[in-house]
Image: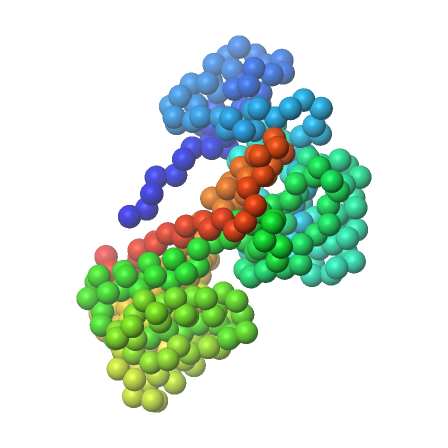
Length: 332
């Protein structure tokens, strides 16, 4: 079941028909706003049962109320949802986020870091386009850093990462619950952190229900089609597949359909990432694991606010994934 989403300052602003900044001012009693605007915002907040973030509201005066975000995700596939989530939390304290794209270039990253520090940002969120670990950045004293989606290699740093192992276990448990007993695992390159983690967790959870050793390939529909052919050529008996990405799952579904096998009647499929551009366009729409990147962004921003207020939380913080059920496992 999908857990109800907590209302954010962005939701309040949308319902009241105002900007996020105006909604924040109205709820915090700041700025010069018309009485009817304040009333409309407060009514929207009450209707949505919205409660302002206490950490954001308790920030000490004298801050610049800006936070930097450094990413290597050039297309925004992961950083944009993270940014939206972070802004939802930081907006309650009237904080702005400055997004910097390092493009996997250490020199460019150092340039962005220097610029952010010169602007006296209150803190920095570091993210990227893939999970795993990275070398920590060197920020100025008193400027806390939180790593989101990827983790810092330094155990004393604060990192918020998706629980990919937990997501893989959710996928397996769902397939077993709907009656599948011979499950294959098809995922991305073996050298890729997420591919290894997801495949290992799924295989361990399946135990005797694992149809064959996990297959590793590319993060692509082409590999999904190829993997379906490989399993068929090897005579592997399977009635479900845990795929390491939605692209792989969609390609696998296409190959099954072309060979005359029906999804989910003959084979149930679960993807990973819940990338709606892929998952909803698949035939049939894909059941998928959602890493809740917006929620992860909110969690990272909350940890950063606590660090800014002098209460850092070092170590790895795992953010739960969730299962989104569609027609590829449970027909409409």
